[in-house]
Length: 335
Length: 249
Image 1: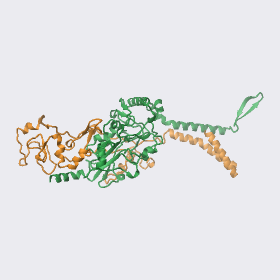
Image 2: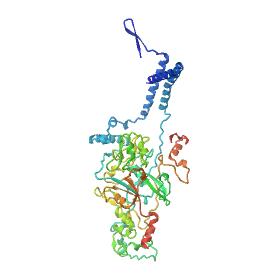
Image 3: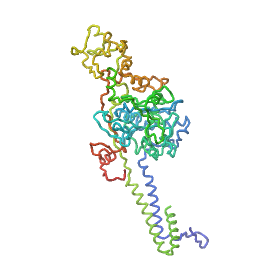
Image 4: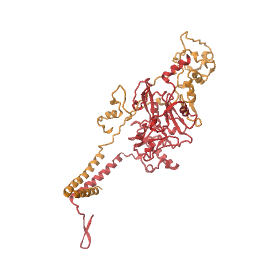
């Protein structure tokens, strides 16, 4: 491109490029300025960068499945410090592994659910979901009796008291599918199915592409569009790596059957709060568990069976309608 | 970078122009385009830096739910064996009174004790449908067998057979504690830990607040304009955004 013109003793006195005119100089200058500005613009989100969210160790952290015990402990230490710095609460955070010979199944009795939404809010409190913007894993859909048109159900029902006698209620949360479309579409394997059937997310590996959200036929996944806000006094310090530790902006989250509780034998928070006993949880590989009994003896169905996701979340009905049926039953018994 | 690409464009332009045989005009055109590339980038960059699309995230604070609404556990306390009840602020056994005073209530006289008991259960309003007349600390089955208050399920099951069967299997009622007896105590709540035996049907309860999140669909209800039902529109209006800025839909 450039030509050197040698004069006299061969010293380079003058270096010119053909076409280095005023015009091309200006043009190149503007182009360079534009390029620099574009780089600055691309980096501009860094103005909001929160250093406490990021560290070299965090950046270099491996995928959950590739971490050994030592690396996991280091990651947990880092998370402990971050949580403490941000929420002024020392969390009890562990990495709890699945148990052998356990496959979790959830069953929900639609004849008993009264739509009180206690499960929704107990879940938010247990799992450190963002309060602003609001993130909830459980949706409760109100539908007219005699229909199952989920698409036209009402999430926003406001009633003085529930249940309304002309409606019934269907809570929907992650179904922990055995054939999970969300796992298939993840381009970075940040979400996968664990041996006990729970579909989990490595929040540190998720890139926030939201493919899984689009793939889920139950709309069970939620995206953190912005940094989640949780009041310091509302933080649940009982955490695990794959479940309810605080998430950051730009990652997906969803119901994980309260694995920090259930992998230690306890019941999920949504079940414990349910005032009607509509929610049932247990090990389907144990033939005497409550969920096994339900699958054997009740009329059970799964939502959107035709899409082939093989959910581990079942809905069932009782033989008779509890609201109108009780008095009949009592009369029949006494008369 | 930009210069290079401009150069390439120029070259391409030259080729194309050469093909058409109007070289000078084409070169001029390319130069004008080249001039526009730089300022275009600058404008784009300025727009990004000064937030023409600042990524305003829809957010709505969820209404706070009182902690008392979220206490897990049995809804009510069932009577133990022997049953105790509070009279005048003092815990008393049933027989403390019923041994002294014979109460032959058969509906002939108005009740003067246990006025708080409202019977909305079954067709037989008499106390002795369930309570033993002889031993007030026991319940009486249809066959005359006396059972303690902790075995109340046997009494209930005499009328509510399918429910008793389901409860025994664990498919009716609430289970607290652990999901496997090998891991910890499985606490299957008894009949009277949820149901008031004198009025067992559930009263309606006040639902906790509904979602303020996005994409929950529009309300299909007869009352209330849908504008304040669609959460996204609700948020936009509250933020002073125009509802017609449909770009964020």
